[in-house]
Image (cartoon, rainbow, N blue to C red):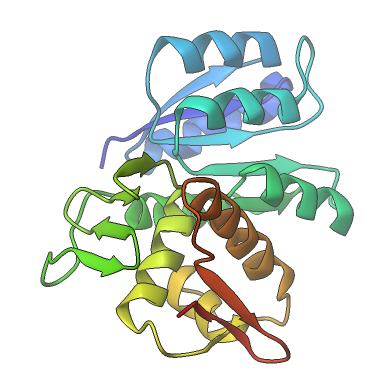
Length: 226
């Protein structure tokens, strides 16, 4: 354990409680009390995970997320009182990995932190063998992906989604199956989370290649394109 976690929260009481709870769970939290301070800390060192509020002085949480995604694939859990569906979808599209509405349960947040860190870790797949499809090469040992020989930066969830699809390239996966495979939680009926992450993955793959890599099977789910 002992992973470094950036806690971006402008309320000192909430930040202190979060940092105390994460420390007790074995992590190394670092508080940032404004968006500007978070930007400096993001530029200064890598973080294994970021807990991010949205309504911040200096820079907004959305701005911090955009800057972070330029250089890092570390999981980002947004923790905010803005819990409407449109905001959630926009944040997932911008590269957030999870969304927790305030007020949140500390035990649940710590559980989500642990789950995201396990999924973003360096543990290779069971056989550690590279997967190939068209011009995609996925290396489970290093968790790196190249398309047409060029590296493509994916978030942890995007990498895992591609890993599931490329393991069974002819199979059509429902959103429910993908959610349970990648997020590791029971599916609760919100298919938009999967759709947004698959859309982000498709955009990144297509930008690096002339191929169309992921097909939507309407009414069913997704599969790799022939």
